[in-house]
Amino acid sequence: MVTPRVTEDTVIAALREVKYPGMSRDLVSFGMIKNTRVEGAAVYLDLQIPTEDTAVIAKVEASVRETLGRVPGIGELHIQTAKRQAPQESAPGPAPLPGVRRIIAVASGKGGVGKSTVSVNLALALAQSGAAVGLLDADIYGPNVPRMLGEAGRPTAHEGKIVPLVRYGLNVISVGYLLGDQSPIIWRGPLVAQALKQLLHEVHWGGLDNVEVDYLIVDLPPGTGDTQLTLVQSVPLTGGVIVTTPSAVALMDAERGLRMFREARVPILGIVENMSYFICPHCQGETDIFSRGGGRQVSESLGVPFLGEIPLNPAIREGGDTGAPVVVARPESAEALIFRNVAEKVRLAAEAAAEAMPQMIIR
Ligand SMILES: Nc1ncnc2c1ncn2[C@@H]1O[C@H](COP(=O)(O)OP(=O)(O)O)[C@@H](O)[C@H]1O
Ligand SMILES: [Mg+2]
Image (cartoon, rainbow, N blue to C red; front, side, top):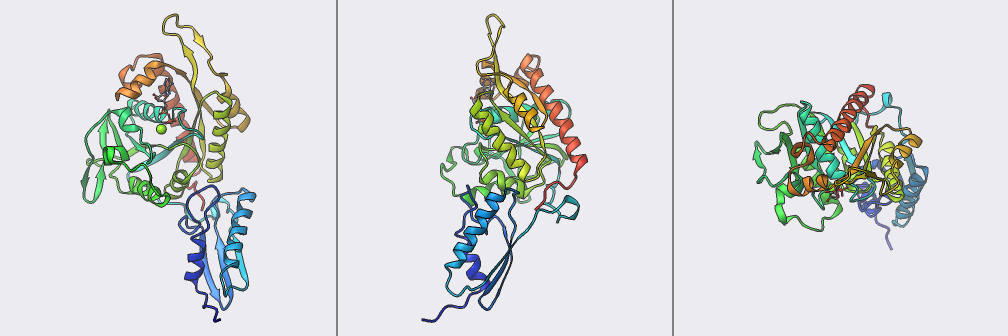
C-alpha cells in the first residue's frame, strides 16, 4: 500500500476534527494552529492557545499529537506551544472597532442571573450621564434585548452595513431585531461565531450621523463558551463586568466567568450582585432572600472591584418585560439610582483600564 503524501492541507484537515476543550469549535477555526510546515514525514506547527491553564494546554497538545499520530505518513511531530508574551512584546491584538471607544462585556457563568437586565440598565444609565452608548445583544440563541427595550421595527442597511435601531437614545443591535421570531433555535457553533462577528464589524455603531460611541455594552449569553471566546478574539475589550446572584452556585459560576476574562487578559471591571435583597413593597423592609453579600466576598477574595447590590424588585422585572427598563421608566426610583451608581463605577473602571493598557488583548 502506498502511503499518501502528507501536505499542510492534510494536517489542517485532521486538526479540524480537534475541538478546543469544552467548546464545540475546532482548533483550526479558532485560529490556534499557526505556521504549519511539512518536510517529508516531519510536521512542524505552532499552537497558540489563549489560556495559561497548563491542564488545558496539555490536553490540546495531547489531542493534536494523538490525532496527527493516526494520520498515515506522518512521522516526526514538532509542536511548539506559544508562550504568552508580555504585553509590550506581543503582537497587536484585534483591531479596534471603528467608531467605538470602549467595549464592555457583561457576563455571568449562569443564565437567569440578570445579565440582560444589568446590560440594558447599565447602557441606559451611561447614556443618561451624557455618553453615546451602543448595546449589542450577543445572545444569538436567546436574544433578550428586544423584549427589554421593546419592539422597534427592523434595522436597515446603509452602504453595506447594518444601521442600529435607536431605543431611548441607545444604538441597539440584536439578532432578535434582525430575524424577529424567525431566529433559528439551533445554530451550529461556527455560525454563531460568524453571526457575532457580523454584529460587531458590520454595523454602523455610530448610526447614520456617525457619532463616536463612547461605550458599547455587550450582553453575553450565559457561560464561558464559543461566543465569549469569539468576542475576546474579535475585538479589543476594555473590560468585563460579571453579574451574579448571592446564591452559592451562581457565585461559583461567577468565578468561572471571571477566570475566562483573566485568561484572555481582559480586565475585570467588577462584580455586580443582582437580586441581592428584597424590599417589601408594603412595609419597605429589606429581606435577604439569598445570602446577601456573597458578591462582595467573591470580589474581595479575587481582588476585583465590587460594583454594587441590586435588589430583587418587581419593578425591575416589569421594566424588562414591558420594554421600559426601570432606569428610564422610573428615573427617580431607588433602583434607578442604584443602576446609575453601578454605571458610574463601571465608567471609571473602564477609563482606568483603558489608560492602564491600551493594547490589552494578547494573542
Ligand atoms: N433585580 C431584579 N429584580 C426583579 N427581577 C429581575 C431582576 N433582575 C432580573 N430580573 C428578572 O429575571 C429574569 C432573568 O433576567 P435576565 O436579565 O434575562 O437574566 P440573564 O440575561 O442573566 O439570563 C428576567 O425576567 C428579569 O426581568
Ligand atoms: Mg440574557
